[in-house]
Length: 166
Image 1 (cartoon, rainbow, N blue to C red):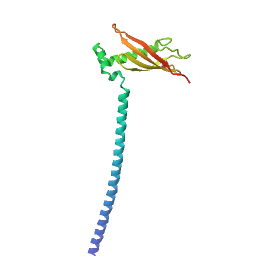
Image 2: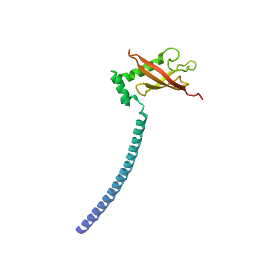
Image 3: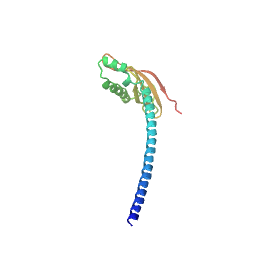
Image 4: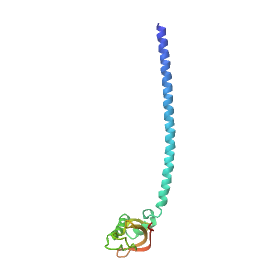
Protein backbone atom coordinates (compact mmCIF):
# COMPACT_ATOMS: atom_id res chain seq x y z
CA UNK A 1 0.00 0.00 0.00
CA UNK A 2 2.77 2.35 0.91
CA UNK A 3 4.46 1.58 -2.40
CA UNK A 4 1.32 2.45 -4.35
CA UNK A 5 1.00 5.78 -2.60
CA UNK A 6 4.60 6.62 -3.49
CA UNK A 7 4.01 5.48 -7.06
CA UNK A 8 0.87 7.66 -7.33
CA UNK A 9 2.74 10.57 -5.80
CA UNK A 10 5.61 10.02 -8.24
CA UNK A 11 3.24 9.88 -11.25
CA UNK A 12 1.39 12.95 -9.95
CA UNK A 13 4.69 14.82 -9.46
CA UNK A 14 5.87 13.77 -12.95
CA UNK A 15 2.60 14.99 -14.50
CA UNK A 16 2.88 18.25 -12.55
CA UNK A 17 6.45 18.77 -13.76
CA UNK A 18 5.41 17.95 -17.34
CA UNK A 19 2.49 20.39 -17.10
CA UNK A 20 4.75 23.11 -15.73
CA UNK A 21 7.31 22.50 -18.49
CA UNK A 22 4.73 22.68 -21.29
CA UNK A 23 3.07 25.74 -19.79
CA UNK A 24 6.36 27.62 -19.28
CA UNK A 25 7.51 26.71 -22.77
CA UNK A 26 4.27 28.13 -24.21
CA UNK A 27 4.58 31.29 -22.09
CA UNK A 28 8.23 31.69 -23.11
CA UNK A 29 7.42 31.32 -26.82
CA UNK A 30 4.54 33.79 -26.50
CA UNK A 31 6.74 36.38 -24.78
CA UNK A 32 9.50 35.77 -27.33
CA UNK A 33 7.11 36.31 -30.27
CA UNK A 34 5.81 39.52 -28.64
CA UNK A 35 9.40 40.69 -28.18
CA UNK A 36 10.19 40.07 -31.85
CA UNK A 37 7.03 41.90 -32.91
CA UNK A 38 7.80 44.86 -30.64
CA UNK A 39 11.39 44.99 -31.91
CA UNK A 40 10.11 45.21 -35.49
CA UNK A 41 7.62 47.93 -34.52
CA UNK A 42 10.33 49.92 -32.73
CA UNK A 43 12.60 49.65 -35.78
CA UNK A 44 9.77 50.89 -38.00
CA UNK A 45 9.08 53.81 -35.66
CA UNK A 46 12.76 54.72 -35.48
CA UNK A 47 12.85 54.81 -39.28
CA UNK A 48 9.74 57.00 -39.29
CA UNK A 49 11.27 59.35 -36.75
CA UNK A 50 14.44 59.62 -38.82
CA UNK A 51 12.42 60.46 -41.93
CA UNK A 52 10.41 63.07 -40.02
CA UNK A 53 13.57 64.62 -38.59
CA UNK A 54 14.98 64.89 -42.11
CA UNK A 55 11.73 66.50 -43.28
CA UNK A 56 11.80 68.97 -40.39
CA UNK A 57 15.40 69.85 -41.13
CA UNK A 58 14.57 70.41 -44.79
CA UNK A 59 11.45 72.48 -44.06
CA UNK A 60 13.19 74.61 -41.48
CA UNK A 61 16.11 75.43 -43.76
CA UNK A 62 14.71 78.87 -44.60
CA UNK A 63 13.82 79.88 -41.08
CA UNK A 64 15.12 82.83 -39.13
CA UNK A 65 15.26 80.81 -35.91
CA UNK A 66 17.85 78.46 -37.45
CA UNK A 67 19.81 81.02 -39.46
CA UNK A 68 22.84 81.96 -37.37
CA UNK A 69 24.02 84.63 -39.82
CA UNK A 70 20.65 86.42 -39.71
CA UNK A 71 20.50 86.19 -35.93
CA UNK A 72 24.04 87.57 -35.70
CA UNK A 73 23.00 90.44 -37.98
CA UNK A 74 20.36 91.53 -35.47
CA UNK A 75 22.54 90.86 -32.43
CA UNK A 76 25.35 92.98 -33.91
CA UNK A 77 22.87 95.86 -34.14
CA UNK A 78 22.06 95.39 -30.44
CA UNK A 79 18.65 93.71 -30.79
CA UNK A 80 17.38 90.87 -28.65
CA UNK A 81 16.21 88.38 -31.29
CA UNK A 82 13.77 86.58 -28.98
CA UNK A 83 11.90 89.89 -28.56
CA UNK A 84 12.47 91.26 -32.07
CA UNK A 85 10.93 88.38 -34.04
CA UNK A 86 7.55 88.53 -32.26
CA UNK A 87 7.64 92.32 -32.54
CA UNK A 88 8.10 92.19 -36.32
CA UNK A 89 5.30 89.63 -36.70
CA UNK A 90 3.01 91.67 -34.45
CA UNK A 91 3.66 94.80 -36.49
CA UNK A 92 2.70 92.94 -39.65
CA UNK A 93 -0.45 91.57 -38.00
CA UNK A 94 -1.33 95.09 -36.77
CA UNK A 95 -1.71 96.10 -40.40
CA UNK A 96 -4.81 93.85 -40.43
CA UNK A 97 -6.51 96.40 -38.15
CA UNK A 98 -6.14 99.33 -40.57
CA UNK A 99 -9.49 100.65 -41.79
CA UNK A 100 -10.24 100.15 -45.48
CA UNK A 101 -8.02 98.15 -47.80
CA UNK A 102 -4.97 96.36 -46.45
CA UNK A 103 -1.88 98.59 -46.81
CA UNK A 104 0.42 95.79 -48.02
CA UNK A 105 -1.81 93.31 -49.86
CA UNK A 106 -2.39 94.70 -53.37
CA UNK A 107 -5.74 92.98 -53.91
CA UNK A 108 -9.18 94.22 -53.00
CA UNK A 109 -11.35 92.08 -50.74
CA UNK A 110 -14.64 90.65 -51.94
CA UNK A 111 -17.75 92.59 -51.05
CA UNK A 112 -18.39 92.90 -47.32
CA UNK A 113 -15.11 91.26 -46.35
CA UNK A 114 -11.65 92.33 -45.29
CA UNK A 115 -8.32 90.88 -46.37
CA UNK A 116 -6.25 89.69 -43.42
CA UNK A 117 -2.74 88.32 -43.18
CA UNK A 118 -3.04 84.87 -41.61
CA UNK A 119 0.42 83.32 -41.37
CA UNK A 120 3.82 84.93 -41.34
CA UNK A 121 7.13 83.13 -41.85
CA UNK A 122 10.34 85.03 -41.42
CA UNK A 123 12.93 83.57 -43.77
CA UNK A 124 15.93 85.62 -42.68
CA UNK A 125 16.90 89.12 -41.54
CA UNK A 126 15.45 90.72 -44.68
CA UNK A 127 12.64 88.53 -46.11
CA UNK A 128 9.16 87.47 -45.04
CA UNK A 129 6.56 85.22 -46.67
CA UNK A 130 2.95 85.60 -45.57
CA UNK A 131 -0.42 84.31 -46.71
CA UNK A 132 -3.62 86.31 -46.73
CA UNK A 133 -7.31 85.70 -47.20
CA UNK A 134 -10.67 87.36 -47.04
CA UNK A 135 -12.41 84.04 -46.40
CA UNK A 136 -13.17 83.53 -50.08
CA UNK A 137 -9.96 84.41 -51.91
CA UNK A 138 -6.47 83.32 -50.85
CA UNK A 139 -2.98 84.39 -51.78
CA UNK A 140 0.58 84.89 -50.67
CA UNK A 141 2.98 87.81 -50.51
CA UNK A 142 6.72 88.12 -50.40
CA UNK A 143 7.98 91.08 -48.39
CA UNK A 144 11.27 92.65 -47.48
CA UNK A 145 11.62 94.46 -44.22
CA UNK A 146 14.15 96.66 -42.56
CA UNK A 147 14.60 98.45 -39.31
CA UNK A 148 15.60 102.02 -40.02
CA UNK A 149 18.19 103.97 -38.04
CA UNK A 150 15.44 105.62 -36.01
CA UNK A 151 14.17 102.14 -35.00
CA UNK A 152 11.14 102.16 -37.31
CA UNK A 153 10.03 98.99 -39.05
CA UNK A 154 9.48 99.32 -42.79
CA UNK A 155 7.82 96.68 -45.01
CA UNK A 156 8.19 96.56 -48.78
CA UNK A 157 6.03 94.34 -51.00
CA UNK A 158 8.21 92.53 -53.55
CA UNK A 159 5.84 89.97 -55.05
CA UNK A 160 2.30 88.76 -54.57
CA UNK A 161 -0.19 86.38 -56.12
CA UNK A 162 -3.80 85.44 -55.71
CA UNK A 163 -4.91 81.84 -56.13
CA UNK A 164 -7.48 81.44 -58.90
CA UNK A 165 -11.07 80.99 -57.78
CA UNK A 166 -12.75 77.91 -59.24
